Image 1 (cartoon, rainbow, N blue to C red):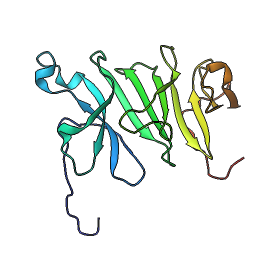
Image 2 (image 1 turned 30 degrees about the vertical axis):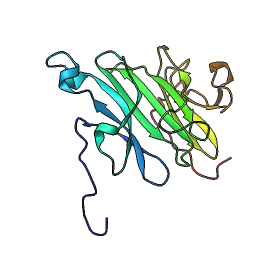
Image 3 (image 1 turned 60 degrees about the vertical axis):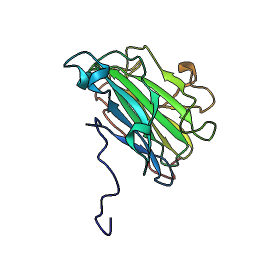
Length: 184
């Protein structure tokens, strides 16, 4: 930042992507479109996958992490928890108001081959995971059309194990939340 010098990039076919940086800022997860020749004519912008990029390496050596074989129109988000422990992957079909969510504990698997565990899949609901104070918090409209916030045990992602900490409000819609450090 001090010199303004471009270190590398841009990465080809990586439009409108969020970036999930690993600790040390030497690698990140991101969403990238497939090459034109790999998809039907005119559909390159509809086929995406999640990759891991190592800073200083060429994009052709980026590792495919997730999404292989996904249908056209699938969107992905890849993020990393603030402490670097968790990879968060979400997937949705176009702008459907539902998504699938997977988490991988990066202390238990390599960044190039994260062992993904399902938090939510094939459910007609939305979920958004975030991490604070070594806890998994999930905003969801599953079972609560106006949304609620749950805590999920890191050893048991089953829906039955989710504990509601902020229940659905019958008079308001919960659209976002933030967990402050040091909260109980």
